[in-house]
Length: 437
Image: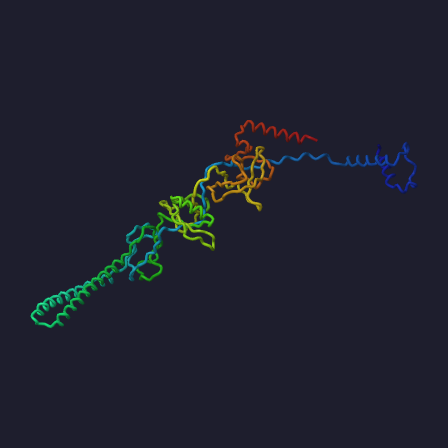
């Protein structure tokens, strides 16, 4: 059908009410029923529309695989633990004070030095206390001399009373004098002991073994027994203690472990890396639960020869209460959180990702591993790195440690030759899709 005829048909049927104004039909045109012309007009319109359309779009290119790192869900025996936040504290801490007043003559320790029990730390000017001791010794000697004379007089009065040379009153008075002088001698002895004790206090020794802190008073200062700060603080850091708390829900488990006999093992973990710093024993389960916080206090003691634990340090204390057989574990990095709860990306046999809701027991965390209680089974492969690029149904590719990229199934043992063949097949399929009309 020519273009002129198409235009004529369109013109004719565009104005059905003005048929009387149209001229005679075109030469060679046959009169057809209106429905046949309508069909022809529709065919023309479709033909014209098809003539103006663009060629069919090329098939969309397949999205590239997402590089990820994966790990297998493993089944193993793990310890049953409870973990609480704690602080390191010395087993014993002593603030060394002077017990007598005086001028501080010298300091015999260095700041931060390890000291032993009985080691001399400082000395106070001893001369005033030596003078008090000498005075007490002289007073005692005076009292002893008077006592000796009184006893001699008493012996004479006892002989004279037999001859009625003295009165009974004189004899009784002499006996009383002897008793007074005996008491004076005893008082003098006590004064001597006190003077010697005060003199000994001028030499200040370490009451415990431990690490000396900063020097709080310099030599030359006047120190007093009433001073609140003292001279130095000594902390015993080997062994050392960790004080921590657990929720009251853990009380029954801890109490049952203590009743079984041996004290539960406690591990001190570094807060940031969860690295085990020391292993010790639980020594205290407090005798009450704090109702205001809903927690119970505990204390563990650790050997600390390398001084990995330090007073005031914040650590996580993990109490080992038993063993859990055949537990499912996976890296903690695989755990993702959403408003609906915890989930993990699982890579199936076709290397496609899917979202799997899970539940974990975070109290039994073993370093970088968590215990999975629901949602996964042993042998499933979970994504531990690259989740932020994944979507459900996306194809994943395993990134190896050396920087190579391979299919996730390669990690399960697929040969390199099979992988190359699969890659060639994928390239051929993509080329065929592009060449298709």
